[in-house]
Image 1 (cartoon, rainbow, N blue to C red):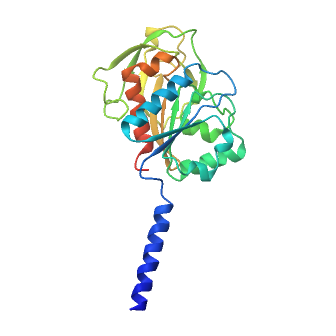
Image 2 (image 1 turned 90 degrees about the vertical axis):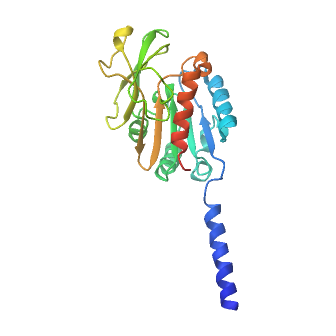
Image 3 (image 1 turned 180 degrees about the vertical axis):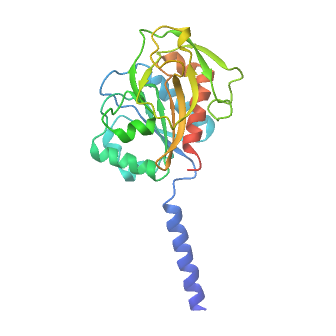
Length: 244
């Protein structure tokens, strides 16, 4: 009888230990918006929009500009991390290592707009996010975005193939050919494109154990009040969160 009781206690202890090591039942998302270069005025609107999405879709949203928060222990509580128009060299080597281990342990990542204008010397990050910002035409030209994949969670709400809108239209270098492209932009509809006939603007992929979604849209305040764009972001967040 004592042996049976002992086995029951040990089993309960190990079950509780396993539960303690899991992320909470309610997913948590961290928005990181540190800038070491150009600071987009739309960042507060982006934070506000994602917080609203969290309230409406059952996930908690934390925010920080403080890179010292990037430790393995701190990051392990989050189902997804959002780089919201970060710019420049925002993490040191130890913080980079913590972030890599977060992704390798199955974490999710969402990059919005200038997240590709970040960490140019960190090759792992470049491959993870899918490319590097190169340049953009002046202003926010009107252009046709082409929906290439209507089946993915971040684009399934588009009923048409053409998404006409104004945007700061990024040109890219070091594009990762292994990503799954969701949206391209038609360079014939504006001036200043430098990626040719196939100019990706949003994509996703599994990378080094984690899930990654990126969209180049989101320059202006108005983007985060645009229903189609906000649903696009929500889909990317839900993909990044996954089963975490």
